[in-house]
Image 1 (cartoon, rainbow, N blue to C red):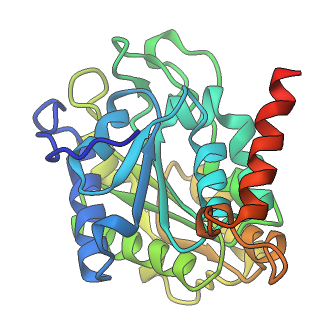
Image 2: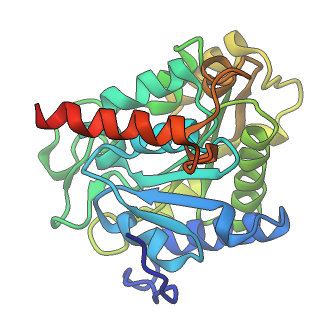
Image 3: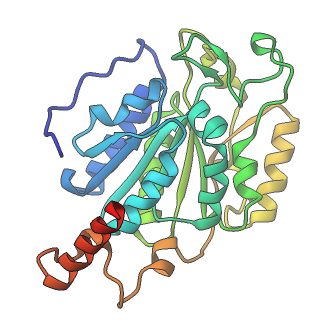
Length: 287
């Protein structure tokens, strides 16, 4: 069942970094002339989980931490869709962390945008996987998902933006969508998106971000260089922004689908042989 509705007004706190992500995604889709009926956006649980409610598109909330298997299945069901998954650092790196590494490995043709604020804003500010040592008495070292992605050979597009720098955020969002549209596979874009209520990092991040797009000699096509540079910047207390890595590898759907198998959403459901198969499948659950 589907329901057509007018995009809602965002419910985020004034100043939330997620507004920038929403604006960039809307702007990128408009610049790329992606019609609403070809957009499929799903969101996880958390403050960022309502983002797709504010877009003209198909979409829904997934189970907590299950954005990536959902969008992977959607892309395999209908490769002609522009498929986007969005979520927060808790949804994507905690309960959804296992799915993240397998998505990097599989390289499905989807765009995954993670809004990272280092806290569980919806549940009153507990430390998330990316919270630094000392935040809310956190004794653990923070997770670096960019370095995680670089360590997995299947990854093909890794970038980071900051909602406080909207021009670059729009450019990277558009580049991510273009990578998947060209058949390059999964685009992973982390956005530093401050929580003004529980972890207002605007002042800290404004002075600690570092743009590798402007670094002379940096080669985003060189995985080893990217990993080494990320480690150096981490040790210096800097947060790298920009297109960090891009490579070439077949997408999951190009390997899984072929001329002998039509994607489920594109099949003619009126064909007698197909209806018979569907009925047999339904009957198998009754037996």
